[in-house]
Image (cartoon, rainbow, N blue to C red; front, top):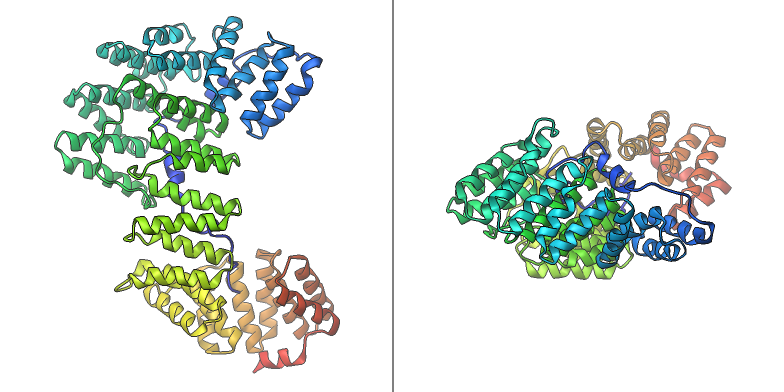
Length: 581
């Protein structure tokens, strides 16, 4: 059968943006300790019944990742129980995750009176001191924290950048030393050490030391070759007059992450860090990325908020904030984060594509289309915005509009390349659904000329020919080839079964279509096909069962009418006779 046409977000490759978020941190989270330590920073006494309603509502909002509402409910509960340590802990975490940092800091200071070792409260207070330029207070805030969980690497990082903020650059580098001491969890912590050593040395133009540190990060392979680290290293190499080394760094990243096609490495030279505040923001961002990998979205968002508070113009942190908000269902807020990323950022294009995808998810198809048209106007040399627009419109069955979008892409292609087969395949689908078969057939044949063994194209064209009763022998061979290439694809197996049916080989059709139904029992068309085949071999009761099943799975109006007619009258003889010819 022809593949289902879903919304474009399910098919359009937007992996580069996910890649950015996944690579955001320079360290993996330490065995889940960071999450547990922060979430359970304080003991949990019973909550007074007089505040139970607000408390439970706050917990419910937290579970739904609605941190703003959670904070309001928990603040209401605190009015009735102002010294309740669990309420203080939960309320300040929700406030901080919602970006209400001043309110959160007030609660954090209250919490520290009850629990001076509360790690997250201390880190928040230190960040507020840093924001105010009081670096000595920031250093002092974390000095007494016990080293466990997240503080094992946060204390050295806060201390290092606090010393840099006080003009003590050598002291800042010395503060990083615990990260490479024996027992400091191996390569993960060494990467943090090397990256921040590179940033500090880069900040004060110690080129040799900075280059050595950047080389150590990049040379660590997969864990060191993050988008952020290669951006920083490449910009450094360009600043010191080594553009070839910058290109090598980017090439190493692309080899490791070939799907990162939407990232625009434009050749920037800007330092990632121009102040101690920027450096501390880098540290907080790295932790946020690590926590995201550990599925601690709310805590990761908290650290991202802190990073952006210190360094508002931080595109990758905005990406991470958007990704985290998106992952928890806050698509409008995610788009607001993505919109703060300017056109000069390497991830700008990816974030714009994600904005369009989120609009589609929200049901605002016109806004998604407008976003994509805007991208196409900005960069006429890039076809992916128009391809995505075509996919969007095709996914919503706006066939004619989809064809026009694809036409604009194809018009710019002088000589089709092998890797462009999918453009012709996608346009072919839209054309076929728009009842422009001659053009559709030409596109499918072009796609096969570019990629002769592409199973989806073989299936779509072969199935279409079977449906039309055209080129049946060639169609059967094409679908058989598609099944050979994708033996567990129920839709392609259905096409082969339907080809057997059209050839009049009903027994073979039944056996093949039964396998297709096993793979996709919820598909109305496949169940309908199996019903027809069963009827044709005399298994009429089973055929009616399959047709009834097909009705359950939301068939389109035309198929629904056909199913209802067959349930009343059976399979028309002319359909069997046509199949056997």
